[in-house]
Amino acid sequence: MNIFDFYSPIYDWFMKFWRLYKPEAIIRALEPKKKEIILDIGGGTGYIANQISKKCKKVIVLDSSAKMLRQAKKYKNPKLILCNASALSVPYKKGDFDAVVFTGALHHINNSDLSLKEAYRVLKKNGKIVILEFSKKSFIGKILYLFEIIYVEAIKFFRPEELRKKCLKAGFQGEIKKISRVEYLFIGKK
Ligand SMILES: C[S@@+](CC[C@H](N)C(=O)[O-])C[C@H]1O[C@@H](n2cnc3c(N)ncnc32)[C@H](O)[C@@H]1O
Picture 1 (tube, rainbow, N blue to C red):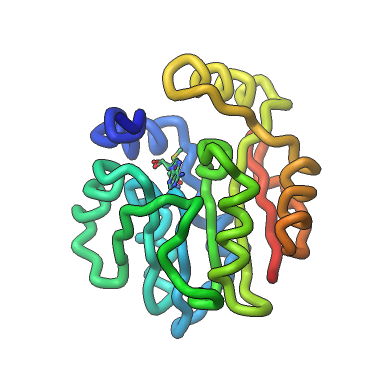
Picture 2 (picture 1 turned 30 degrees about the vertical axis):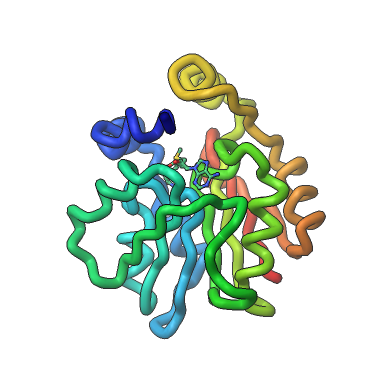
């Protein structure tokens, strides 16, 4: 069983309680446009995708947990397309998307390099990628990290420069931007 299937009913509550959702920072970095089609990889319950969708044509929420995706149905948002699939084998064609996002998801994907390659493949030339990840440098970051390894699964938080290197290796260009003591973004393009 996918551990996120188990946590899906309380996931949004948890993220909001600890103020871990950062839709404004993601939208600012992503700069979505009215005609764009955006892919949210490991998009979970669709909270971030629902916010992004207000500024673009549609958002595909791809996640391997059917129960996380089921939570997104509460938005009754025709601009949200739910896709129960693996980030390691994205069921879309080369260049299908104007932008790709991963928010707090990449460190949960067991082959992050392969999923970045998949993101690169399905992104249009000059398409944008925004990745939100957590740093365990601060006290709160360390608590979050411990919480994840105890209650969720064996994960590893990437150091910002490590994430940037992974993205460059997958073919993207871009930079790291710190947005809080715990969260940082990789903002790049194909
Ligand atoms: C911490 S949640 C992040 C959810 C959401 N993006 C957010 O902003 O809160 C990580 C998500 O990644 C998904 N995930 C993990 N491995 C995956 C994979 N190989 N393919 C697709 N989704 C995956 C999990 O099911 C989960 O919904």
